[in-house]
Length: 414
Ligand code: LMR
Image 1 (cartoon, rainbow, N blue to C red):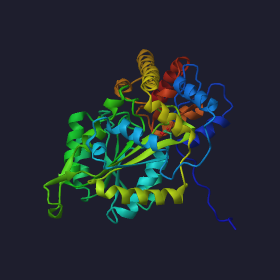
Image 2 (image 1 turned 135 degrees about the vertical axis):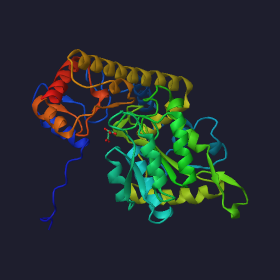
Image 3 (image 1 turned 180 degrees about the vertical axis):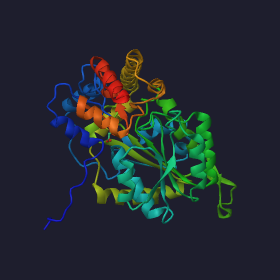
Image 4 (image 1 turned 120 degrees about the horizontal axis):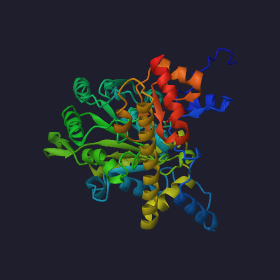
């Protein structure tokens, strides 16, 4: 029987939705999960997505057949082009293996399973401290142990670049290093391009394996190009080759997982991709075949609807331009919320320096509140946020800013 099964704790992010739903208070505010809301506090279906959906509904050729295990061919190549760019050497040299997978989580799990089977036995995955909580579920589930590297300074509210470089230098050679491509979740603090170069130098020297989690392309700077700059810097890097290769340098191997949940607002459709950049085109067929075998055992084939929408938007210039404008509308509203919250905290004289709310980027703000303060906000004010002090700026609306600022003041001064 299952009488001995202990109850698992609620998920620290998605579990908040359950608590929020159960809370009868009319004052409640949900700043937990990173999901964009309009100024009217409604979920947002992008106009361009609606149009493509209508087109698909009216098209008699729309079927509900299985996709291939590796996903929709157009989606695979177009999503790779979005992240690696038009002039990507790896794409030009046909060194990238791309599979459509189940948004960010599914793509990460697929890569983790592949690394667990085919990368150096016993290699540890280094995660930034702090990181998205689900990273701690995904890698151990695939049999990969995780450790942390320093990432963020609570004092400066910036990337702790010295700690980060020290920790990656001290990590055993050949470790897997998880990096957030842009809009680091939860801190909203990204390395500068100079710092990315320093990180790359250590990774090359130590022959680590970089794995980029790319869930917010377009949300950090408003530009798909700029938000992919770190990925593209690494993709063009080379590492010393072994003598057997007969060359001095070879392209660096790496992986990228990509989610279209936030930037296309396709949260529930599970649209994403896993890309493995190989050192040579000759190995891609074998890598793809193994990735397919893993995907088959996990979920057989990915869902078709969302990927079909995404592929249409990525392919058509006019639809792409429309998408870009809508991403800009979303990121501008988030920026406005940052300013409004910062000003309200300034005006109500909440002790402390809150400038980081303005300097952080992406969907979240890492306020710097203790777990106890976060729980106080939940219990007294019905404000839901993760207990690491992260709020989803994308879930904040103007009519709630003053309430939130006054509640934060109370939590800070009491
Ligand atoms: C978040 O961090 O809130 C999002 O990435 C949603 C999730 O799945 O946790």
